[in-house]
Image (cartoon, rainbow, N blue to C red; front, side, top):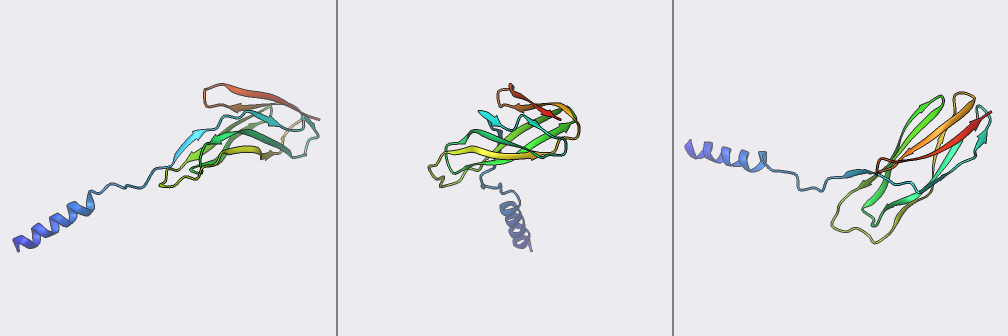
Length: 130
């Protein structure tokens, strides 16, 4: 009976306390070098922003998502990248080469577009909605 209890405790310790050895994904803000869009549009039209910038230096990097907060006169955007460590990361440069983000303005007037950068600064431009 004692050996059965000891064996059960040993199995529980062996499997119950193991840590995952899988690499953890890491999210990071992507630096946007520039953004292109039509500067004047009509209310009801869709605006397509095209982003340019460096994401990462290997196949372990990818573009994750756009985080946005749209208000009537302001659009805040943060571009997120993802680093997934692996045993083999292909040698390739990952960039945003005109990656698209679209939205529809909700009112006429000027809209300040603010793209947040990793260093805390922002790339700021203005859209006019007629």
